Amino acid sequence: MKLNSVVFKLGATILFLQLIILIPLGYIILQLILNYSMNQTEQQLVQLSEKYATQVNNIDDPENLQLLEHLANMTDTSAVILDQNGETVLQSNWHEDITDEVLANPQIRQLEHGETIVEEYTFNSTTYLKVAQPITNQDRIQGSVVLFSSFGLISNSIHNIIFLVIFASLGAVALAIGFTFFISKKLGAPLIAMEKVAKQIAEKKNFSLRVDYKANDEIGSLAHAINHLSETLERYQTNRNEFFSNITHELKTPLTYVKGYANAVRHEMYQSKEEREEFLEIIENEADHISNLMDDLTDISKIEEGKIDLNKEDININNLTEEMIRRSQFRASEKGLKMNLDVPDNTVFLFADKNRLDQVLTNLVENAVRYTEKGSITLQVKEERNQIIIRVKDTGIGIKTEAIPYLFERFYRVDKSRSRANGGTGLGLAIVKNLVEMHEGDIDVDSELNKGTTITLRFPKEENSQHTTSK
Ligand SMILES: Nc1ncnc2c1ncn2[C@@H]1O[C@H](COP(=O)(O)OP(=O)(O)OP(=O)(O)O)[C@@H](O)[C@H]1O
Ligand SMILES: [Mg+2]
Image 1 (cartoon, rainbow, N blue to C red):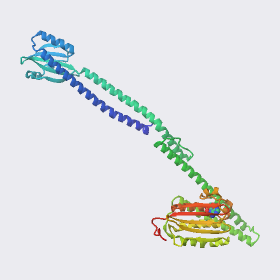
Image 2: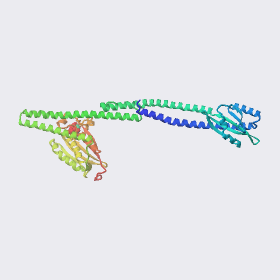
Image 3: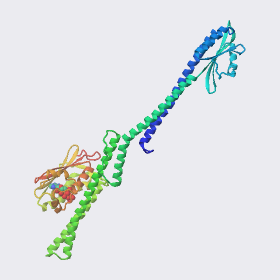
Image 4: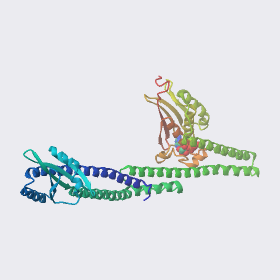
């Protein structure tokens, strides 16, 4: 496990937190027990000394002294009886740490005033409690009884507690290490797997890889996000590849024509002057086709990269559709088609980019004329409460139902050869859909084979339009 790994940091933090809690807690408990035990010992020793002092009311009586010795032995305390002058009369359970110096402590003089003395002292690194009590007989101070008790027992308990605290700390360390390993397995493994996948995606462009981790937590959603990213990239890559192969293909065909017919003209491979004109016309048409393709490609790449800014203004839709009819009249009448305009009596305004809306309608009307052999083409405008509807209806060849979902894909044509013969590249509707969506509108296709097609555009009425309530 690396020192800078998240799991290691987590483990170290847990360990640090455990120790930071355990050590002060252990210290506090230790102090509490220590204080409690010392108070208890002190109280017991004071009580004992009082008892001795009353028992031994006459230090000259050897029987009394004997009794005291007996008591001291029973209670496992060291006892010393001093006379008025501070001279030792009796020592019981004597041990070497009770030095003359301790006994001759000037405080003992206080006893003469009938006071009890309680004091602690340390000798040879052992702490003792000393309690001295005056011995009085008929209000006369005869001497004193001094009791000693070491804190040996207490220090034993303290040692036990320290041992327990150390033991608990070691347990905490072991627990933290165990937990860290557990977490590293639980968290680390999917994170490492995700890192691998992300690296493969970034370095090897291998977009088919997915992270195999399904859980309803943050790591699960990270895995989901990575998978989503690689799916998007995969789709993008496929689209891009298809896009380039389509462009190459679309360019190849007209270029072959241009090259072939130019060659034919150069080597005078025509039969008549008319045929020569025909060859030159083909070259011109194919060059137009390439030029249109280039324009469409520039448009679509600009739209998809979001590089198109809409210049919105209130557009008089009645005028715009009328203009459309006028423009396509010539092409339509060439094919014997009738152009109809169906607009409401009132003027309908749409807050949109004029050039782009023109581009949308031109594409749709062009399609209608291109894919209609007989009948009519109708441009209809309707205004509803919240939306403005524009329809382009034709009585043409129609579109089979299975093809409808693909109509807006780049380069899609229902009948490739037919569209090409008409100069189509299959980019028109893809551009139209993008432009309509940029205007927050939507586009809908309704078509019946050999009966006709209706394309419906719906645009919301915009707040900032000056004519939203125009009637
Ligand atoms: N009004 C229509 N009637 C029948 N088929 C249509 C109609 N409009 C579109 N289509 C079908 O949908 C396909 C895609 O249309 P789109 O406008 O995107 O491409 P295109 O017209 O072939 O070429 P481009 O518009 O790029 O010059 C067309 O090739 C055609 O098969
Ligand atoms: Mg078209």
